[in-house]
Amino acid sequence: MAAEKKLKAKVIIIGNAETGKSSLIKRKLGHVFSEEYDPSIVAKTYPDLQEINLWHLSGLERFRSTAISYIKNADVSVLVFDVTKKKSFYDIPYWINLTSMLASNAQCILVGTKIDLADKREVTKEEALAFAKASDNIQYYEVSAKTGENIETLFQAIIDASKQPEIKLADSDRALQLGPGSLSHFHQQEPRQIRTPSDQGATCSLSPNPCSIQ
Image 1 (cartoon, rainbow, N blue to C red):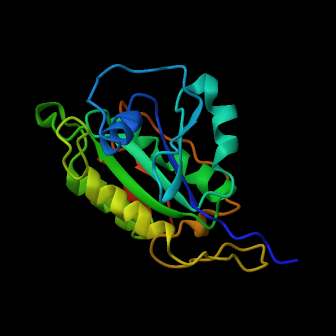
Image 2: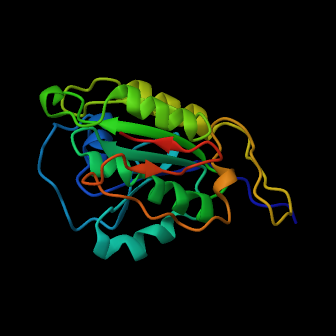
């Protein structure tokens, strides 16, 4: 019997806690911007978004074991960090590894939030672009939920990515490089130890061509 056709692509938004994941979704839905943080969310879906099945997953340590179960079979993984918190940027490889292990066919998009806080910025656009390029040339967007900058552009990119043909891994013990937007070449690799911002010259080995974050 043929598999049941998906009505909506599954999209997950993941990243460390307090990186603005909820805020960018609320801005898309037309809600008033708020800096309040709700630590009780483990996994939340948003039925008002008609074109995608969107899941916001908690980045809190105590909820991660539960939240990561929702990553399985995602079609798009939106990897979020806060440009004012460098550790959230350094931790992106952790979320990449989870995606590659649980949803190896997912199209990936990297997002830097809170760009309205320019005077507090710790991650430059150039650093993030270099990281994205080294990570199989995935798309990178910078947004502000407070001002609304690039929110519509980001969600259009998410919708476009969700419509791309599904990528299949070959039956092989070796990982494959499958082209831009796919992180399938991380499949079957062990999660990496990510250094904190206090480490000078921290390095994140994300691909055959490692990306050094200064």
